[in-house]
Length: 108
Image (cartoon, rainbow, N blue to C red; front, side, top):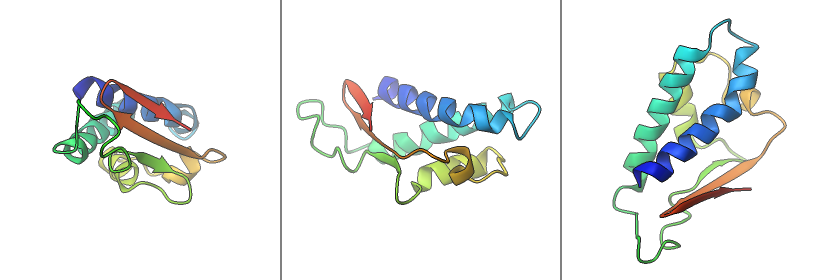
């Protein structure tokens, strides 16, 4: 579970990096805090909902989305990192749903 969560959090961190870089001179600390907060939030979300023998079970619960709404974990991670720019602005023009499953993660 830890590996999949780390990869997923890394993907979201990379997704906001470019636009965050245009809003601050050194986003390194904020990106590290964002990543850490997202890992913690995803770990809490996935604990008890991680079914190695049946990876699709709980798939929707473990998903993380930025589509018609911003997932609360993304907002919390940005807030915890002290990022003043809205998640909507950092991910503008994109829509994503990520599924974090045992052995894999995917996004659309």
